[in-house]
Length: 405
Image (cartoon, rainbow, N blue to C red; front, side):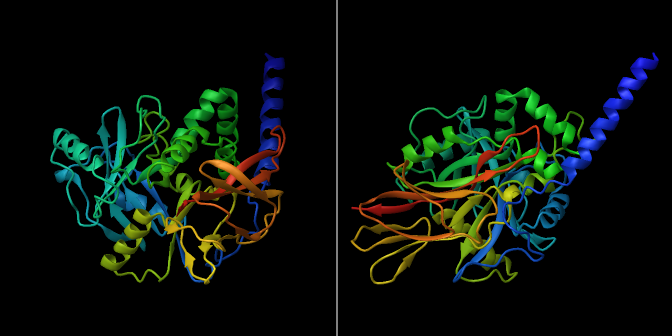
């Protein structure tokens, strides 16, 4: 009995000593700034999430509570996507806690789930049957046929909700980053690693969640393959519900909405500021999400605000992410990081899903020699405390430029 008590005491002391060690670890790969990063020249960077559930469906908190968590996480906007939200339980768009709150929904469609948002509050249907018919019609329309709404394929490879076959032409894009799916993949990959993250979560929540990151290679393979055939954009989804633990409503909301919102987000780049006017701000964010004028960031590695990538032609005209332009000689792809990362890093340029250039510079201007679908990815070699080894983690994913022949 005494030996058992001694052993338990030693384990607890070791656990808390290691916890103190972990609590001192700073995962950010760029210097933290008191007021956040600076906007890139010529643009305003606004940070937000999609795929968020409230207690109306499968979440654990009210929309007002979620807005408060979004404010604490430093978000500028979020899109509420309650599951199968029809006419009787759809919220109105608003500013809540100084955060732009957009009310959409996530709907069952075939064996998958679709995220839908309409700034005009266009209903997808009054029930699931009507929604299925409406989606079937919308998704068969040619590119750009649904100008007044946003339709995104959610978590395309989530167990039980996988997409099969080619993507339909009426789809705006694919959720290539999904925080919940990443945690499920981590559990499948290594249950011991997930359990370890749970043990160290009280000491360093940000690191404990970030260390579970696995590159979404399957999702990007689908995205690159499909974007070579049709115009699509990539999205990051929180799938926040704060109900990873059973009885979360009664015991603990884990991971909290705030922690979830701090992991991965969409950074919209606008040419004019948000003003606090609901109608104009809603349209600006919707248009940027619709046109691919944003990048995806694994914010747990550090604030990416200040990142920008543009196309420039020989006359000096610049084009934002999501642009579709005709190829001409003298075009360059310009990339600028907010600052040089503290760890070793690389900027990778992809053309039609193939890596064509890897550069270790914080700012570059790369000549384009042929048409294609170009996107940029920023990877960091992140040093991690024992027992973890150093790992490459993608920090930033740009949306593509469609350079046509």
